Length: 359
Image (cartoon, rainbow, N blue to C red; front, side, top):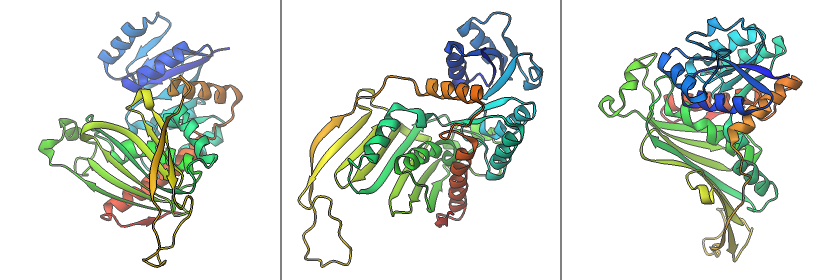
């Protein structure tokens, strides 16, 4: 039996969800909800829905729809909690775009509600289903990079500027999730500094902010410190002249680069040779001690499975619904840990970049 789904939100990501659920043999799109009539007409034209698919401007219009089993939410982050809570209370399984909520307490409440209702709460952390992230995790687990030294990431573009969350909450969760997955650790200390550009330089969307008095950072620098001493630096900006989606982990034997903007060489392993290969040095050693020298020996473009990450997300969500079992990668509980990190980073940002200890 197919799983009946209502998609809330017919914007860019909502359209992708609709497409994937339509194409999946185990799901049936019963309704699409969006307050914008033009968006509803656009999806009607794109997918040529028959009269059995309800197009509604308000979620309340389809809450009692016969055959409805699950709700997929692709709306602004500030609306996630209310929509997801209502859907869970109605007895529906929920797939929600990241972040699960915009504060930690709401995220925890949603997890508790899902457990109480015995329904699946699945968060769309798409990158964790990306073939490059899968392959990169295996590379690191096989110790092909040697001793991990540090990491860095850039996630930037020029607009759109979000009006409900800052660049930190909009962008950072992807790279934090990838670093955590690759390292199999979570940070013990975080730090964030940010810049709010003058209003004249920012899109007019900012004028529609839910809380106009709250300044939303347009540029953010994040530092994550992990239990083993590994540090990751992340550059986030939505007013950057070029689009970047790049994450790098540097080790004593090589470097792993995930560059989403290079489709022909998305995942690269650079092998290294050192005259003191794998040997680490204490900063207290004599200044006369020879320093390790590293030279790039080879640059290997790694092959990847050709599959759309969001297709994997939708497939795994449907499996979770069918079996009523959580997905460890994208469960509500897993997402809460990411929101805990974002909340600590927000605290550091408000404190002008002071480090915040986690756990």
